[in-house]
Amino acid sequence: MTTLDKKLWGGRFSKATDRLVESFNSSIEVDQRLYRQDIQGSIAHATMLGEAGIISLSEAEAIVKALREILADIEAGRVEFSSSEEDIHMNIETILTRRIGETGKRLHTARSRNDQVALDVRMYLKEAIRSIQGKLVDLLSTLLSIAESHTGTVMPGYTHLQKAQPITLAHHLLAYVQMLERDIDRLNDCYRRTDVMPLGSGALAGTTFPINRQRVAELLGFSAVTENSLDGVSDRDFAVEFTAAASIIMLHLSRFCEELVLWSSDEFGFVEMDDAFSTGSSIMPQKKNPDVAELVRGKTGRVFGDLITLLTLMKGLPLAYNKDMQEDKEALFDAVDTLERCLEVFAPMLGSMRVRPDRMRRAAGRGFTNATDLADYLVRKGLPFRSAHEAVGILVAYCIGQERMLEDLTREEMARETGLGFEYFGEDIYVSISLERCVEARGTWGGPGPEAVSQAISRARERIAQLNRL
Ligand code: ARG
Image 1 (cartoon, rainbow, N blue to C red):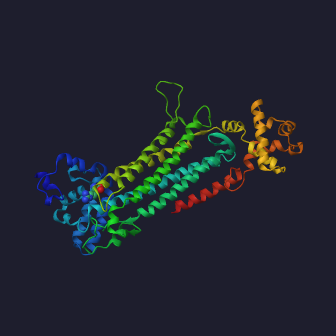
Image 2: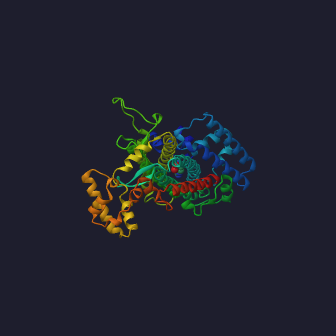
Image 3: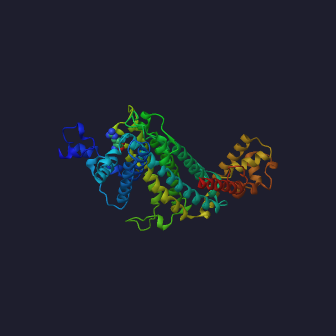
């Protein structure tokens, strides 16, 4: 009975908890990282209880003072948590009561661990979202700097991983800028729904005490208060939404990583990772592997797993709180940690990477990436596009047979092979299908033309400056 005596909920029990159950039930190993949010939440709760006259002002002050000291002690590494206290909430309450006696026992008035944990997780996630958004902004800045120096760096654009049309490296990187900007926006959305204060929902049915929930929200910097006490304790949508947004970010990074791995190969040779961001082989002396990009690609699976964990955890749960929900934190923390670490390493990996414009230019020169431009040229000479497409297809087949490129053909050959009149093939045809011209000519809004890309970079910088002002 000695263990039993220590339990905060021990009143109605006549047997001690089985040792196996105690460790099985305990979540302190995982949720102890919520200590700061838990204490801040308790300070706000105690303050409100005092102001509302539910406990005396001097009791509230004593509780707040002791909680501040506990916080300082935890941060100084002077506190050991115990698994017999189950979770961070009961650990802190137990420490409080040990320090200030009976008064400490008043803190949990008008509160349940069910609304307490919902509050703590929301507070934690609000901070995590802002931190991740900051790292996304850093990555965006790195991408834009690289893009700025490569608006004229011609490279092949691909579809089906087959060479398609020439673009520039800057244009390619700006595609990722778009993805990451959407990611920041998605996180803003998720933040809005996380920023709702659930304390006061009680165990599930609110409380009989005249609490002031708006005051707690104000003290903790929440924008709104949850509307329904059942929903307040059983909602984990915000965690699911976050891991979904995190999964999409990882999905974007994984696509980028796949390209970096390909581009680092001898076959492509478009980029070379810095020595500081690569590793070697224990057996093959010549090897230099793009491990960081591969690992980020691999860790994407973890974050998808976290999303599926949370979806499966919540599926079919009856209202309101269920102990299953204690499992949410491990998945949520893992998604946050994995994403933060990937973002931290990504920007310096990109920033230190060597770009090889010569290799990109050479690759763009093979594979008939200017075939569409030749067709467009014929269209400008009056041919319908479908006929131009066919004529150029014939020329491509002819070139493949001869191991030549379109720009190597004489105008006479072009006319002969296509059966079109010589008047379709002017002297300006060669300039029109040069790679530089192919890129330049695509100057419409959102296209790869260097001028259009420079303007896109300026607009992106402007939007990011606004984000920073938030
Ligand atoms: N450790 C629990 C969790 O993380 C806190 C809430 C427990 N509530 C309860 N009635 N058992 O979900």
